[in-house]
Image (cartoon, rainbow, N blue to C red; front, side, top):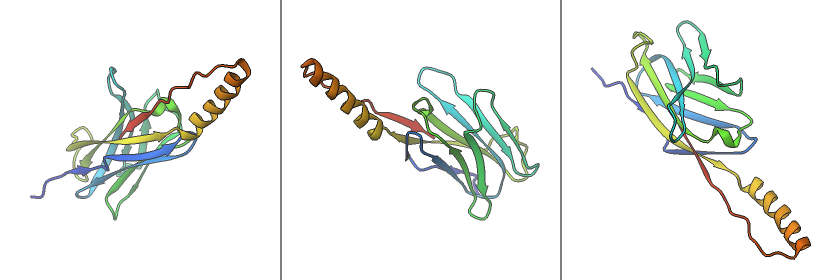
Length: 152
């Protein structure tokens, strides 16, 4: 018997207001998958469950239609797509899946990867505004840059 395993890239990136697509490659045919979001210091949140055999998707109450599942059966890949990426989307994202013949209540494997949310455009815009304000007030204070990671 071959082992049922999942593989996710360790990192992916997306721009604010852009689209992020997280992938989860599964070693054999699968009946469905789930995605979870985990933010530091909090419990993981259920994003969605996609039951391929029943052609059914359940989305968690805290998540909007910006989060959607898809899959490529021949390539054995499950996806989570996040549209209009927001700073609040920065978190760890976990993929879980079950075998094609298995019950969706029995997850065979769980993996995680990191998505870097690119904020350069927002930071540059904020820096320009701050510099303009500083020059008007004759100040030299520099803004601090903040970086965020989205983990899948």
